[in-house]
Image 1 (cartoon, helix red, strand yellow):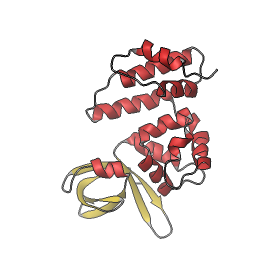
Image 2 (tube, rainbow, N blue to C red):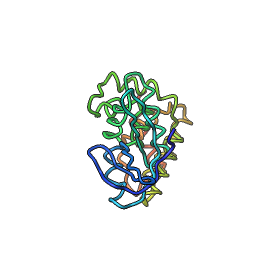
Image 3 (cartoon, one colour):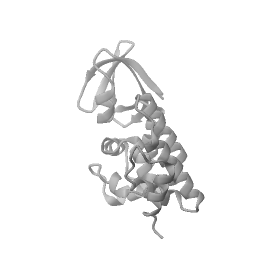
Image 4 (tube, rainbow, N blue to C red):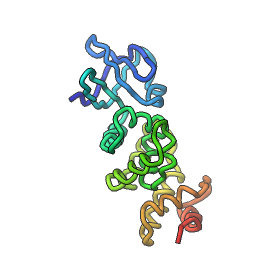
Length: 204
């Protein structure tokens, strides 16, 4: 199995990047976001890959982070979703957003992907919710922000702490996440303010 591909960008095609590795051009399918942000022709890149084998083809799917590859692999374990469908979902919603959508039971966000209806979106949530955790989702999201040079502020840290507080009060992770996600967070809000606002959205 090919764990990752590292080499120079040789070309871009409609849904993939061609990476030159030891004199060979490897077609690696990727999300639109990855293709946009990966760099330019001549740049060196590293993508973590999944090799999909069909009777008449070998296809590589690549992701810039191991965590993104992990969510892709989880998606293709869902009945009715193959690599193409998984990539379609990740084109419509980023891996970070997808983790939170699954944990919050937000089928509408997942169903935005072309070819993914409400029934399939519900199956994704049902099959994968127990395989993810809020702690991991926030940690991965914060790591992505740090890697991209984005500021890590109260928006992310405050949300995580507010959700922790709500779950400590006895609410489920999905209830806490749904409530906190409905709060319009401003830079002057601390964790307590986010928590008070989130409590207004909790369903009794």
